[in-house]
Image 1 (cartoon, rainbow, N blue to C red):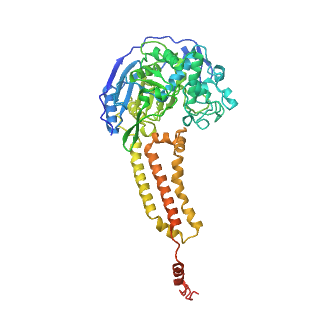
Image 2: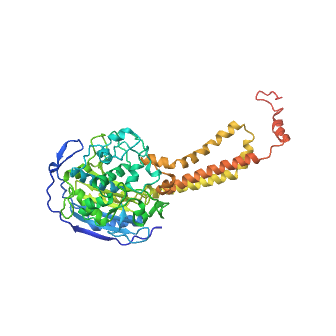
Length: 532
């Protein structure tokens, strides 16, 4: 079971006054492709609603850890240019207490940071969003000639036409550098014409990061630090190429049957897409700049207001999409706009949310993995409710209930399998009395659990619009894989036992076969006439 949460070490209600900053007048193309001066962009005005107090935030997070057994979390809440609360809770996989300065992987929250690095090059006039990527990155080549039409904007908004269905990067050998990652895509097809559909696909951001590296003239991690992290005061934030470069090599936890299990993370390539490592304190500085139109907590402008607005705004094409540039814009049922993004590793998950109507920013990173350990979104949802004056209740990850059901099905599969094996000889005797064309079809349903088990990664991939492996599925939802495995094993055991029993069963004596026929002779038919 998870240990009792360690006391959180927090930075609370720290004032970080932002100085007045004048927006640059250099134009950038907006989602409709019209040139708009940054100075014309409307400023976000925070509502007068009070931010949640640090004590209520702390109490909610502690209650969540205690009720769900979550091992550790990094939490930050900001409002305007102030840090309301930044803290660490619980412990890392190695047992170290988490604080506001504990370094944690933020997974796909990294995409927004990569997008901002690209936009800094746009502001400098070195990149045009609507020019083909190949203009800046000649090495970017796919097997589909339409790849030459993919623009920088389409890569950032994930409308490039690339997709996991055409290039399942997580099932392939993992590269070591951005140059290798882009080179590995040369044989990849497109799943759709550029600019026509949205498909979430990590290699879009490998390409974006490599573009930054080539145009910027220095390694991507160095460029990101110099152009984004250091100007924001994010002194403890870095970008790494693979999960091996993350703290404790990204070791974390997976949820199974109401408890958590410590697991190492396999080596994944992550640069540009999901490779940033940061702290709760540094995440607060990132949120402040996002809600403060590109102005840092100490008043330094690192991007124009129009740039920040553009990264938050979905493109006009294709219509109906909600994905912008490393952020999603989601209108909630109550009419409130939330700008958010999630991040998932096999052993960590994260979520950042901006509330434009109040200027509040929330970010959470937890050391439990995707799907079964979806703790960060649960925490963020509660903190959003708290920020809007509600009294949130702790909502357990769905797996804590679903795993109990799966455990019951697992035991049922094991029991039915054992029963089928023990009764194999009886089945063989009964089957010997029937023609083979009646026996074989009754064995075919036993192939279904085996088929489901072998395709479980595909099934999860369809639900998530991603493609992975069975081993990755075992991280994402262990109880489901165990249940499917138990069903498959039980089916194989029953079929094997029945076939062996049928092959080894002695043939029935002729006299016994005749005895089964004789009682029928002389028995009257329905009309009273004796049978002959």
